[in-house]
Image 1 (cartoon, rainbow, N blue to C red):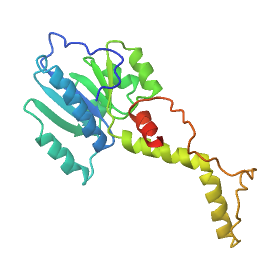
Image 2 (cartoon, rainbow, N blue to C red; image 1 turned 180 degrees about the vertical axis):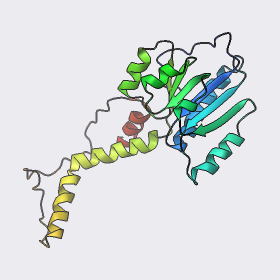
Image 3 (cartoon, rainbow, N blue to C red; image 1 turned 135 degrees about the horizontal axis):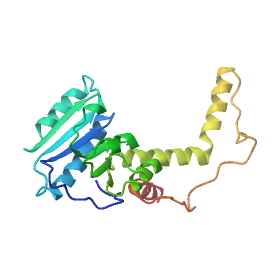
Image 4 (cartoon, rainbow, N blue to C red; image 1 turned 180 degrees about the horizontal axis):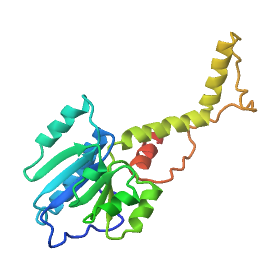
Length: 219
């Protein structure tokens, strides 16, 4: 859960009575994955942290509420999980902040913040710039969605290479107009057939949790 780490995680200040983790998410599944990543960090620094409190900025619906309650009940002693809909209710003692797109205001509002966790594969450029401007914060991420994202990437690659979108649009338009299907490859101003991909070489830009899976699928 810490494949991306721009800065080493700093120690706690001497006057801190415990460590607090603020979770700001919309997806409960992602927040729980982030919680697992945060717990990993906590275990590595348990000697310094006596209390860990997770705060989830999320309005749980009837399906999500049991999951949150079960997660809260299963945590180890000294670790708590709470949730609400207002960032203003985050504990001011928070030292670890979990968010998909952390804002500058959120980062600066938590005065004891030491680490940020993005519970997805790959923090955005904006997030990286925010963290680099705050060298006292370390950046971590989780990869729970790497498999589904890599599968989508492969699907989009095949669709683009084969011109699926344009050909599907033509087929649907002819069907709606009750016209016979036009056979052949002529679409988008070209009559050339789509390329055959077998035996070709693919360039994967970014060989991380997602890119590695894409490369493996293309092999």
